[in-house]
Image 1 (cartoon, rainbow, N blue to C red):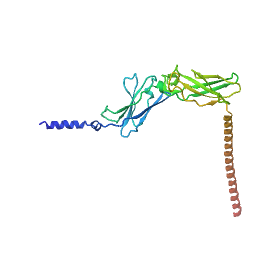
Image 2 (cartoon, one colour):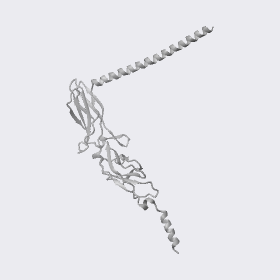
Image 3 (cartoon, rainbow, N blue to C red):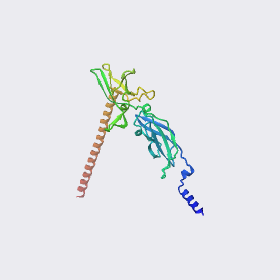
Image 4 (cartoon, rainbow, N blue to C red):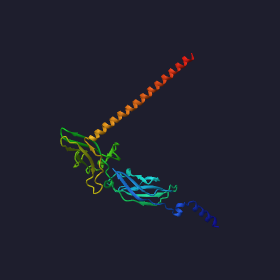
Length: 283
């Protein structure tokens, strides 16, 4: 009889059965996949929040042999993929796979594809920082030094790469300045970190900086740096007020501490005097 053989074959088939493969169970795929990148630090965001499944991010560039994985089996809906995008001029594709941890290594999992992204063209240049400035009243010049903004990447000697390092011949700082007593604004650009302008004798100036990538058609200009001024009466007044308040607080604390010490001494003397009077009365 062939029945026993048929039964064994059926049992063997059932032993290899997996719910997700048998029923073709599919998990929700990612939606609203968005890139956000500032100073080449690149983040992916998507929805929805997973419940009984996880996500794995796949990134592929033009020169990749295959998809590279990031944020494997994550339950988050955000992933930093900066370390996979070291060539900012490359264009990167993304897939976000919906899957479960499975010992049998199921390969067919649903995924969603997001838009392509080219960091060189699309990363936002962040807010520059003015490192230092000097107003030379003898030469009537204002010198402003700007710090290059670091990125997540490093050179072989472990020093950080800056935004300028990725845009060596396509990066400019522009200084916007005005007299402190005026609203009229002027500007001066430089391909270096130092900008020097001529000033009028006896005048103070307020200024801020923008960085730019001139070749770009979009996202060309950075955010504005904080505005600084060479001198400010209001700022000097604030410092005087803060010093006066600090001295006042210290004086109040000293008076309170001194009052407590004197009060304790007075109470101790009264107690000693009371004990002496009780001893005399007893005698």
